[in-house]
Image 1 (spheres, rainbow, N blue to C red):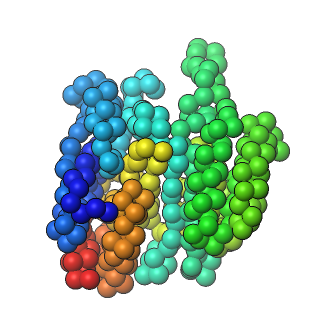
Image 2 (cartoon, rainbow, N blue to C red):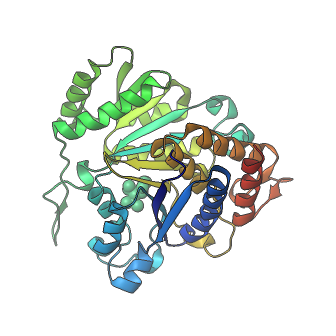
Length: 358
Ligand code: IPM
Ligand code: MN
């Protein structure tokens, strides 16, 4: 990354614990800029429920434009019980869909790598999850989330699951390219035994695969993939899948790492990118400064890697997180008896202290 250039980031804390984990991330961002001399220009904006309260919309066009004009977007979490009864198309979660579509963020990357220090925190056996390293590549701008026609009526409701060749090609290329730098294996998850859209997906993925002779491609049905993920997660490297299956499978892989509070994500398009934790707004613990900021901080690390191609700083940040965990520091969601339990901001500060010491 060119240290002199000003980097514009749109900051969307959102709702619930979103603002707490974002505050923690902003401390880390500050440390990154001090250590590396980066010059961040932060645009703080509203999204989700807080935007509904003020503007009657989960994401205004003007905020979308600000995101569009930024080098990257950082998002906390959107939603909460206060807005649950709103009509479907006015809910805070619609903010996500508008961002994903509006910025054409077609690839959602969700890595699942358990930290050694947390192997006991998972509900799965340590021997099963140890050394797992999965990258879920979820198609994010198409599929049943966006398919038309869609309708909610008195007697029936429906959605449309549709994919075109271009959409499948670009996400497949992303998966194969990522696999090149990993262990070279892609599992494409579909439901080709039942759905035409999945058979089409499978055929297109195979065509793209012919350009990647070094990569091993396996197809797997979605129900089997869900089972295999908890049976033997180490068999997977890159998982390539459509929007809805990726949503479901990424929550399953989350449990391999022990806590949703640990999982970062990147949503990437050809021109834009957004980084956010996989977890939600956790209204039951919001406002208590006890949320785990690690997923948000690890999302910064993904930003350094994918938007700014600064692998070195990204790795330094990841190593800082591991070291803090190795030293027994925990937020309450991942704590066990005898652990040193930290508040949200304290965890961020502990990570920063290690990061600045490298
Ligand atoms: C996610 C979330 C979103 C999704 C919702 C909140 C729209 O579950 O990012 O995984 O389904 O994509
Ligand atoms: Mn989800």
